[in-house]
Structures are given as structure tokens and as C-alpha cells.
Length: 94
Image (cartoon, rainbow, N blue to C red; front, side, top):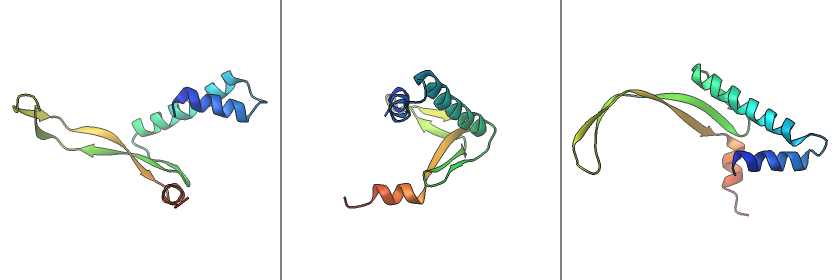
């Protein structure tokens, strides 16, 4: 599902809201999650999962084409851990 599909489905389920307002709400939520992660905070959505930031140490990698060793700098990467309800819903035998 893309962001525009999410906005369209939410607008269909909430006919009392204008689509531009739904788009503003979704964009604001994503912006706040992004800002919190950029500040090093953890974002938890109960039943869905938790977003956090993990640090990847600097390492020596390899260029897949040439095989030449390449230094890869330390970096921060987003990490998502699923919540219990989401995991259970994905693993039901329906």
C-alpha cells in the first residue's frame, strides 16, 4: 500500500472528512514519526509495533562488481519491531 492509497482508503471510510484533510493528517503523523526518530526517540504504536534507530558500526565492505575493499562509515538506520497483535494476525491459519 502506498501513502496515496492509504489516504484514499481513510477518506472513503471517513466521508465526513475532506480528502485534503486526511492527507494533511497522514502527512503530519509521518512527519512526527520521522522527527522523533531523527531526535533519537523511540516511537511505539501499541499492537502494531515500535520504530527505533540503531547504530551500524563502521566496517570494511566489498564492491560487488570489482571485489575491491571499501570503507563503510558508521551510520544510523531505522529499525522496526512488530507488535504482538500484528505478529499474531500475520501468523494465523485463516
